[in-house]
Length: 205
Length: 205
DNA sequence: TTGAAAACTTAACACTGTTAAGTATATTTA
DNA sequence: TAAATATACTTAACAGTGTTAAGTTTTCAA
Image (tube, rainbow over all chains, first blue to last red; front, top):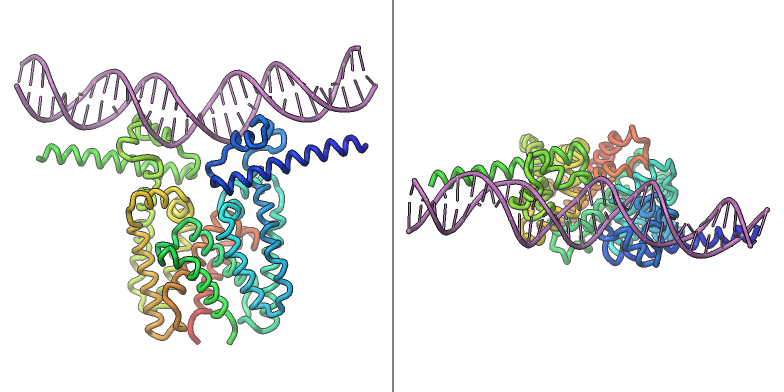
């Protein structure tokens, strides 16, 4: 039994190797310039070997995406320490902006690219880590409302609004659309100002 | 002179033909599934002929993008009739959401895809129609502040926040991320609720 | 030691964007 | 009007893509 377990472990190691090197390449060369052959060369296997471990390229993307969520989650650990819900929501937003700006390739996979989500859908699988983050968001909003810090409204509506704004900020920034609104060097600063503005505005007076 | 003019006109007609059929294909089959060869087949020319009219595929995308802005602009013509700035901003948002949901392939090119913007940048060209729309947005926000309908803040900050939210809503919806927050059949409704919420919230009491 | 199962590779298919070279078709010049 | 030139377009090819079927090597159990 231990022998079959060892083999299974070896298989998992190769799987991880593929994912690690794939993600490194995505970050280094940009998502669209990475081919199956390039990944294969990196790990010193034939290109077709990847297909023994993953159904297709999209499935590789999908799993890289999952590791992106782990990365993001780590950033949010310290969040629990903040007791004021509005303050917590604010910091969550700041983390979101920072994550997106510091890891544009991860962000691309997680929230912009079509492929990983398509895989997820026809795998019938869940968006485990993504769902988790959204639940956290909803809970904070709910908490803030319960404590009378926000004007009462449907939780989903407010959560969607907040998420959409931070996603909008990051994705427009990544795709260089925000330089059309303010000079490139002011983009990051103004993004944070916009987030500040939202939270100040939504806070019940 | 008229003969050289006629030839010029013919050239422009072929250019337009390429753009029209390209966009039709993008809408029909989805942006990523359209190849230069497919476009060429549609217009009954050899694939290489397209390269006599456009530098590369990205330039075709870029010009399709421009026609998307025209389409969007048309939707906003009636906006001038609304005198209340907040109401006008609201309707502008509604138009934005509708445009995105009704023309996802156009939206993709205009605001999500990397390629058209990259072309624009290394052409040194401007984002003419895009800039125009952003100017309109800034002016409305400025107007609302001047009339005391909004809490004073930097115009760019508020404009960025508003644009980011509507873009976030549309792009998350197009990429099927919003079904993770509410059931698919409620997405469109909740998007509008989020927009309503933002405008109600930002309106000075 | 043999036979089967697992892990991996080679070769190929049908695509992709793009370019260099060649061919008709018009237009201009002698 | 005939030859030379410029314009418009095509053929063939390159180097790349994701992916699959078939073949090979390695590993392990009987």
